[in-house]
Length: 251
Ligand code: NDP
Ligand code: 8X3
Image (cartoon, rainbow, N blue to C red):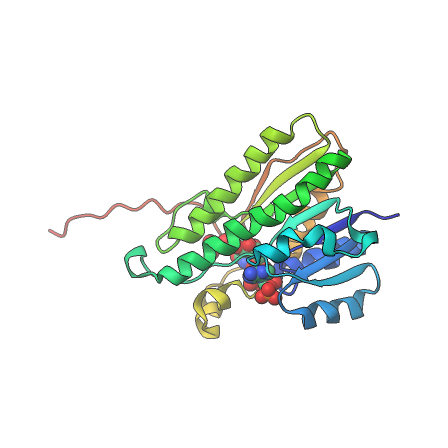
């Protein structure tokens, strides 16, 4: 029987591309997210290898019940892709909304650790599995307005490495994918709530695509079992981490 992956946030962007790619590569995929209609449409397109499953990662009760809520034939999850996440706003920290900070923490940190907590014990018991997290370059390099979003992704990176410390010696792998500028998703529309401003982020660039992210994930999960990719930082060629700031006095 083919192996099973569970992808959070499969209704759009990376998650959708990852689900498509894994099904194409022969995996069975549990595609999750809040917009069930989109997941059902995806299943209509991809067939029975894709199981649509409504899941809000911030709903702690539903996440805790996840392993038992899955149909029996889908309970042994081999690969968990913790992709659901969001950025809200880009204003300076002193002007940010506390509710935005809370939502980023609830989704990018609490949601991700709850889903991991629900599925990791089964992987360890079977001595087989792989947790793939979606971090970001925002977790590696600061930028103005990045405050809680970047900090949440730094959490994801360190959580990944600390999971690795506990999993060493098992056949359970863990990887952090850390993309930079990536277009064609809903990320910037969610961040700004404004389609025109979102489009301007990518103007005049050749950003990464969701398919590039899916390609990296398809690679890490099919490497021989003795190989663990800890982190992959990816940027488009039009981007570089070169943003140190010096504020000079005006003469
Ligand atoms: P999108 O906004 O296109 O997709 C986000 C996905 O997350 C959607 O499927 C959404 O589904 C899901 N999601 C959001 N909140 C929840 C929730 N509470 N419960 C379940 N699912 C949720 O973003 P991207 O595809 O661009 O981003 C995916 C991940 O990659 C995020 O973690 C993001 O931080 C990270 N990333 C993105 C980059 C980019 O430039 N695009 C670069 C680096 C990292 P639904 O609303 O249906 O629940
Ligand atoms: C998304 C990339 O640079 O907008 O994580 O933070 S960035």
